[in-house]
Amino acid sequence: GGAATADLVISRSFFTVPAGSANQASTTMRVWAAILACAGFMSSGLLTPASASEDPEALIREGVNLRREGQDARAEGYFKRAYQLAKTPRTAAQLGLVELAVGEFAEAELHLSEALVAKDAWVKEHFKALEGGRSSARQHLLRVELTSVPSGATYALGDGSPVGVPADGVLWLAPARSTLRVTVPGRRPFEVRVDGREGEIRRIPVEMAAKDEVVTAVE
Image 1 (cartoon, rainbow, N blue to C red):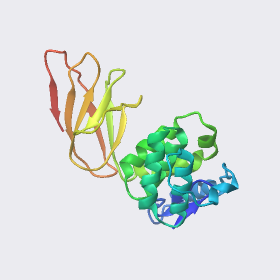
Image 2 (cartoon, rainbow, N blue to C red):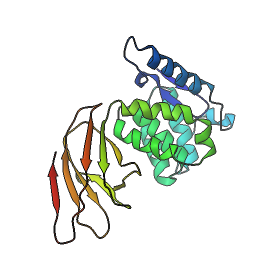
Image 3 (tube, helix red, strand yellow):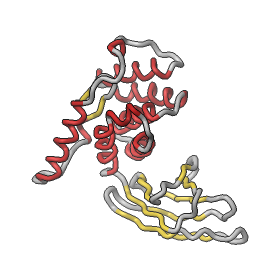
Image 4 (spheres, rainbow, N blue to C red):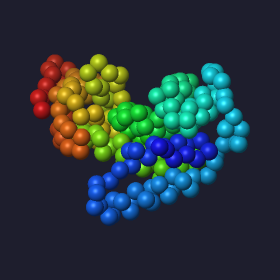
């Protein structure tokens, strides 16, 4: 099942806490109270079925309608296209939420984080719900803490596209064995093999080598 506001739909199945944890259960209840209290941000016309188009707003409306019907997998395509057309905090948030619903936790964490750091009125109004979704996604991921990372560094997993390293150096990765590559202009890349299970933490000091050498670490 899922909880919905005028243009925000979140799957409840991922907001779980260990049995017997009163404090976490209380936190979860507060998160859901915030979700259900979110006011409608768009007009009532949002509930009218929209045909697929290249208009980001129409794509979001169609995606929301599909999610209300429980068709999260189909809705994901609409939100992905909306995000490709207009990379705004709201499209990032909507994409992150549907990724959470279909179990794509690393992608959900990335897009929800992108939305949460933005100074945006829609995000501010739904902040608690979005933050709750991100916390839920992180429960399923491996936390990797990079230290001594030069400013302007990017990282990539395997052959994936590079993404900026967060200011705190913390990455949230899918719990699978992979090669992490950190790059920065003027330095040789740093590579490390990362392996771990969800909920675990890996701390990795990053040694960016001079141009005439490369440092490779095996974790």
